[in-house]
Image (cartoon, rainbow, N blue to C red; front, side, top):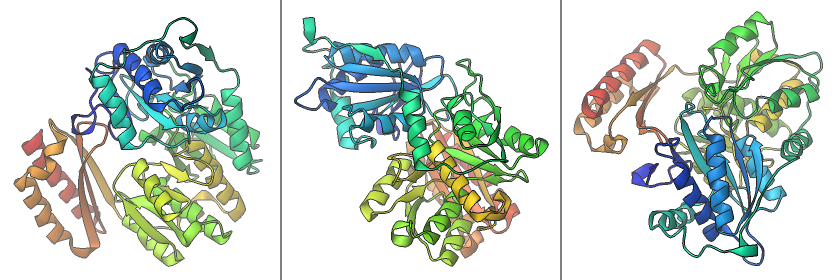
Length: 452
């Protein structure tokens, strides 16, 4: 059938993922579109969907297949073209669509692609809804009962989607960036034109990198997963800061004027204290994942801000935020959710609110970055045959136990399977960076031997 997600499911932790045209095929995409109409359409009106994509070479192929699937089941679709994932979440609500669909594999390489959904409320679909769609697809029922004549659906291109989203962003915050030089790395992805427009509208002088997508260079040694060239360019241009996005712009990382990384932990720490000072941090608390650095927890404790933790994945962060009535949460990787303004991680909303904090402080980003001291952390990705068998290995469990004893209370170890790749992630934190590196490399070697 094609792409498979967690526990051999079609849907994984962030929609359907696979190698385009080999695992995530046009046939599968068409079935997904047809199943979406059957499951997500609301009663009383003609089913209506919006559909966006990033810049991958396979995007237009899958866009056509999904559109055909939706129309064949009697739904209509507005095709947005290349647009960030969070824009689709926003426009799903604004246009009163039954659902929004994004064709993207986020930060993954160009050969991968994915399909993910937002419900009519702009939030990602619950597991049980994805399972209903999956059962229709896997049972071969997506083609049953196709309509004819006037009941066949139709598609139309959008003419104003990017402008609607840009106008919304500027209504969220419009910090005065006059006189500031900002380098942005657009990852040859979905914000290659939108991000420069946004910052220029705020008065910044923008130096844009990786804004020439060719379908194959998305995330290729650039963007939030490869910030090295951004760091160098910030220093070379003597810029005030740098910003990096991933392929679909649901995450953002920053670089200060000294070339230092300002990851999601730093961004959340800066924005949380800014919001708290204005009385805008609900519950004086926020939500992060188990990957968040120990230094972040120390900083938030000093600021009187409570930290709640979840497993890795922005959907779990969001669930906890909603459960607790909080308006800020996110991940070290740069997925930050400002629930007052967006229903998902939004790299451009995060950009505006980080810059708002910066302008209000009248300080440099390197100065704001000092709010937390990062505990040395090493992350190693180990490619394995079966990531789900991690917890079944007594040898790996014993190796982890031995290193936890050596680290004591000043460090921690986290081993976890990736939600989107056949990879086990080894993360070690310790005040002694050499010891952290030794632990991470030894554990990675054990995992490679046992599971590789």
